[in-house]
Length: 406
Image 1 (tube, rainbow, N blue to C red):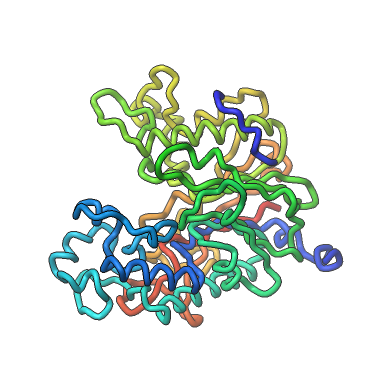
Image 2: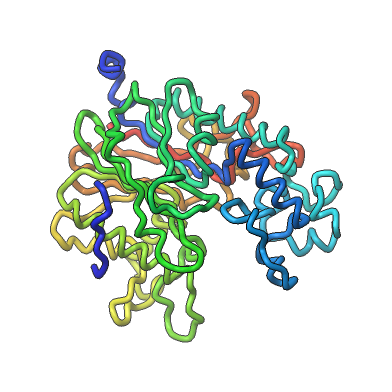
């Protein structure tokens, strides 16, 4: 508790006609480097100028990153190659890898190259269908990650929905991965004036992390604070305090600092209704289940009171009434009528890191009914996307995760 978080903020007839499930349906969705057409055009031009090399590759070649790439996605985020196989693909494709890999038949290809705007529009179509499905399921508020700006999101939202992102908010660094909130005013009353960026979560350093976003809205007629996050990647399940004999992990150190900042936000709302949701880049359910039975084996010891894991840090009940509940995920994808075919590859690596966390006070208000976070399956032109196909554009590497808090 060493940092001061002073910057943390905290159609009527149509709304009355909505069912409680509709009024309280919320979701979180990482949209995988979503860009509007203007940003996409700048990205293509900037990456073309360096033959689609990333900033790290340019550094390895002793070249400076051009100013035109600053604030834009890495040049390899939409190249359609399988994650983690870049070295193999470079050896196989050679210079074509940098130019237009979608023109080259290769075992590396798992999706089209989205440097082509026509292909990128297929991604947008998949996102539109996803948001339409969430709307139909009664979701009225969605936490957003990896979006470039408001315009990029507005282009894929159903009619009547609104959006606010951290892009261009005071103090927010220029970065390609902004976060935001999309909501349906006819279904949920969101206090627009309360929307604020949480700058502390960017931390300090040469490469700032994503900010948070906080606001107040009414769930089932009662005021509820929200904090939307996209936390530091690279420390998914290991202890954040690094047991002896291991090389310090900068990602874990950063995530530990963000954990402490979140604890402060939580503690300030002890006894109140709140929701923390988004891409935590952390396996919270595994952490929860393992920590209760084998804390020393799974997470090591906490030497010098360094943060080791998220949930034990938040659930120390100091001050009283500050405990939280991580909502369970649907264990078998494809159950529950969510349209996700079992074995869908789109939620593979990212499965288990998108969470909805609620306060103990909110959980008590909701009673004993079981609430499960469900994945929303992908469709394109109304057809399910369930298998790898080099010709198919997946809307994202994350599935939307939704739950009804009635």
